[in-house]
Image (cartoon, rainbow, N blue to C red; front, side, top):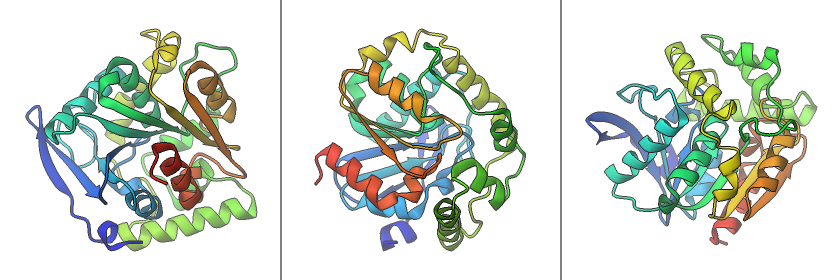
Length: 281
């Protein structure tokens, strides 16, 4: 992993009176990363950050109320998207490419619909549209119960994010080792269990299509790259297919023998796909 990721410092910016923690890597056009459910600054695989930062100014952050950032977590994804705009304002970023993973991908959809002038291009990774079609499927109860445990073990994380094949288990172990080297705590959950409820409420409102977000997917006018693993338990690949069908200017990439963390398992390949999409290659 490159020095700019290994030795990057956590910075703080004030957003609407709250101190928000963030990090920035590389140079180029800004690429804003929106994190998953319960995810923090320390839940991005360093190999992914390294690969993306070669051609982009990658910006990661603890969203409002998460981990080291102050404030109250919004109980709607519309509120979460509005916060992203305020965060961009604080960093004096008028427009950015946006990569949203999982819950972050849901927020990214709302962001692109409500604030289209702030988004250049959009990458939706391992995420879902709202339940506006009978085709859309959601995580089994076992996945949800493990994802909401107060603390997750390495075995939990392997189940949540990877496949059970030899290559999937190897990818889980390799990612865990990278996390251990950089963050010194491995991949187990690092955020407080107190963030589960407000984030779950916000996600549920989106998933239940309050606000007609499903019908408004056709209003996304920016180029969109949709990516997923073929064996994602959290948001099955059919959900990505539905997103691709509903969003007019979209491309779809599916990675083989990969789960919810396909972007870590295939960090180099995914980053090439992202950079090609952004016009960096």
